[in-house]
Image (cartoon, rainbow, N blue to C red; front, side):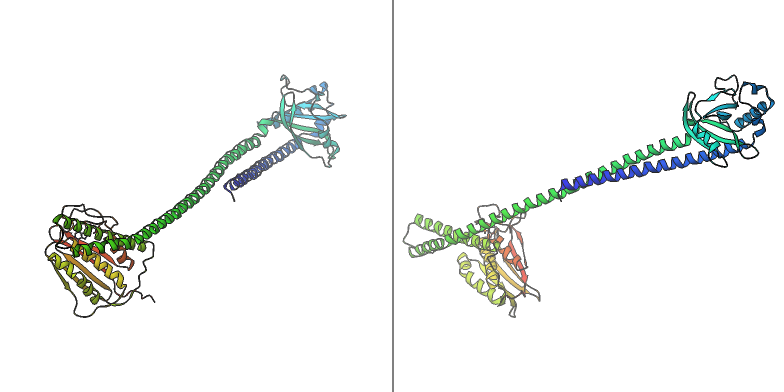
Length: 476
Ligand code: ADP
């Protein structure tokens, strides 16, 4: 799924959660508020019913519901009762008795002070009472109390509780009313709604914040994964490109080295032959030129050989074929080949070999090449003294060291001498090549699971040593 689609789904999901939470929470607040209001209404009904029961119905029956009542002692008793009821609960704003006249209601008595503008005198019409109150007279048998409101009238908003005053036969003869100002009566209900809804919206805001962070976090995480994938893809592509370019480079070097090898060899052989044939017949200058040409062609042959070998090894075309060999014999033969070169230079070449034959399973070609490289370097950089080769073997490894008394490698030489094209800075004694021999040697050794090292001092020559596993897996 695309990041965009997933994000849109997450946003829609968040909205759905918020909407469900809002509806459920607001509904809960209203349920609690409704429950509180019902409880309050029940209390008021009980209160007004109890109050109606203490009013003597005979006193009420004695009243005619007009101004003349004021002088009657029954009226005074009713007023006293109403005042007592009003004083029993400071929340009650108005306490009064009224009776129906047709479809309307008129006041019979009012606990309010007669001098108050809110006083209703006997016979005065109650503007807000009507059908509902008539139910008390014409509805349930026995008549029951009711609570109504909030209702509006000219004095404000009210919650009124009304209960019937019944005669001895249980017939309703009047209604006792108690009014409480709505804000006061329903304070708890209003508070529950206000605080409840504020709390709900606070929670919704927090949830919206959390959900938006979640959507953002998922979006960023997905984007990061997507970017990572893209970077990885371009790295892979680049890598493939590099591998291809490297392969092309290796193939080119391999091809050109291979093509160069035969003519270079031919030139080197021809120059050597000319040099030997014309020895003694040439002037000193001509001999020097021949000498330079011989050295140069030998170096070129060496370079092309090394280049070809190292590229073959890197391209995986130099396949090692371990087989059963006699290592002592290989070392002896390689030394024998180099003997003439050494004696020409007037230096000694010694070998320290074990008494017994050393059987091993290694690639003979590779071992010869390594030995030849180390020996020819030793010969190249040694003008006096000796070169000694030592062979050792244990159950697991074959170890060979080539030690010379040549110019050595300076102690302060920095860098890896076994790296390609790495040579010690040229001095007048140093006849360096391209710096490929030791790199190729190390690759050969490491390809067999072995290692190579050197110890060297400018003053006392160098020691190059290597070890390779003695019993390598034989290839068929
Ligand atoms: P090359 O001999 O073709 O330059 P190598 O990789 O065989 O390349 O050797 C790298 C460098 O290491 C040489 O140029 C030389 O300076 C130094 N070196 C190698 N063997 C010896 C040695 N036996 N004595 C002194 N220096 C050596």
